[in-house]
Image (tube, rainbow, N blue to C red; front, top):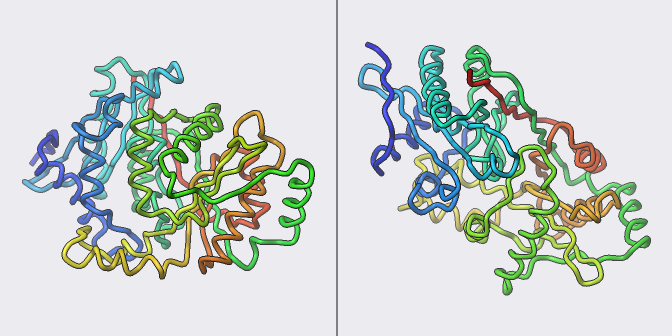
Length: 374
């Protein structure tokens, strides 16, 4: 029987879209099941602020009356306006190990993007660089950290056999408590602080909304020159902050201030994937909520998600101080024993050097692909 492609539009169809992942990863001990309620929120084109600046279509592949793959085609107008480009994206890709089915899915996304006048397809993006992205290309024997992707190894072949070419690799560095807080790093931070003292403080959860405004300003300034960067809209940033507020440990979400002005911040989150991996059905009720609430105190790893300094204050070593303070507070106050700094662009020399200064081990790589739309 031939392969058919259909759009996923209704809530029932979107649940099918989400739950297909369970078929791909059945029996894989390293896959972390997402919370279905979170994924439904992400795919909600009526209410999620991402879709106010993007057009997206979700597709399911069916063969012999069975779902065998899925993909999203994404026209991110916000990205193209900011970069003056005509790039389309694909994301949320899952597929059985069958090149014909994968090709059908990629063709569907590519044709949808071409119809909108776009000349390149980039991905995977779930749904943009501000969320989850990249295809894991090594270390398949280890579960992902919070908000990082995971996929079967054969996805590499499915993408490259289709004709996709590498656009950019993203690095993840593994950090260990006993080696990261080195004497060298401590001396470096002391020298930087003596040169021009500045304050590093924890986020004030009692003034969360105002703190979010400061962080948003720093973020949209610090990363504006980076590959793939898209500035958050106010609504989108506030939406993400509201979600992350439930996970944040203020001890290691830090803001740097110089002369009373915020100049940098570091966002590090407990790796709640340690808990989610124990909720195999992706449902909070009836028992998942208890595993989530009771498990928070037992988390022993974290992920340094974002660390940035406003452009005018970069190259002064302030990022090293933020790294040092983040790791010191996480390990000494919160029993964190290991973590991950991710993702870091392969050609971001400043951040790569900072990760190496922390004695980070480059242990995972993620790849973003490009495909020319002819």
